[in-house]
Image 1: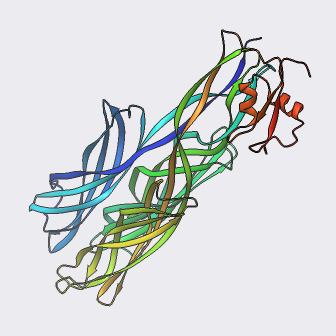
Image 2: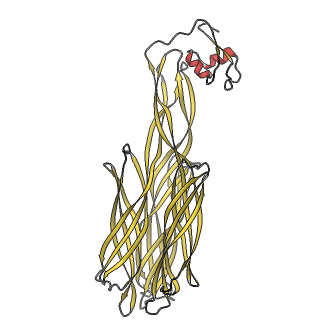
Image 3: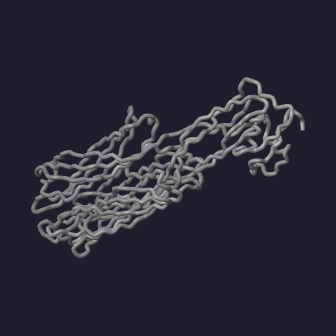
Length: 520
């Protein structure tokens, strides 16, 4: 018998080991720069956290990041005048790995759970807060299996089809965008930019053959102090960023996941033709972490033998992560913040910021129930001439459902929530909030599957067939493959001798003729 020519295939897939979140405490004191006036009252603090690196060190995943703060405050300088100051703080956090988690992929996102600032003295402030890091640990599983045997008619094979999720591509893609805002002549020219908030929304990822098309909008909300004016004025722009990246081998029936993150924001002021500072140029860089999956049916060999030689089957068990499904849903959240008696009355809203914290999720049949809060921070102009600006914070609860077919309570879920838009309006003695949020949900489960990793010819003699025929009565669990292998014949011979027309429909009690050494 000639050497066995086995055809093998390599598969790479991911298995979700566990997911959780950890908190990092932020606490530090900062001096007001000499170029800035003294602090009289802190109005609002905006924190923008960003993960810089995730490194496997020993038995830990070490996450390093930074937080950029913008503190808007009132300074006593010929009356109360708004000003702002920027700081940066580094943070780190560790994820302790369990036994066997030595080859893991960590995915993590961070957001602000809480942030606050207090005045230590007129030249020093203390900022404290909590950064929430949502993380998942995936095991990268790569293995080889036998999918077929070529060029040897003496080997009988039983084939099987397995469904798995393959990772077809994983990479970071960078998109850039530019904004140019001109301040109209009906407004004062720019004295100072107090803050620039950015919100990524309307994110999309679409696959066409051998390409992925990425796109999102970046909404800029800029506050500036006017020249020779104490007023704070808002400016807005909505910039579209897109990128088409060639990725060989991907097709439109695959499904992508994409995580968007602003990595750079370069804001510059310019003068117009009259020499007034009325032009803002902004260059934005967004990094998109893309993974492309496919649900594929792969042909494997479940069993093999030869009537003419002994075969050894090397088998291996593998835990396979299966993506049951994924879906997005949009939720509109409305809430009214009631003003207290000692709150300053609002004349108009200057700016509103929000960030989402998920507090609970529960998998149900064909859906995931999600609960969370939107932490809202509103800056507004008051009707008080002296204290002409004020801020108010609130926590807005919400609940939503994500429909994912096939989900059940024994599976695992990954849910991400993003703020797509947020607005605030004055309604009587309250401030009304309307927010659009996008919820992304994935449902996963695990299966342990056995694969044949190799087939080799072993030394030894094959047991001879009986000289005469055997009459065999089928019992429960019997099939033609098992009988052929046990009696060292072939399924084809059994079908031929017994003139079987429907080999898949054998029933217990049916009599089967098993041929011996005689030629038929």
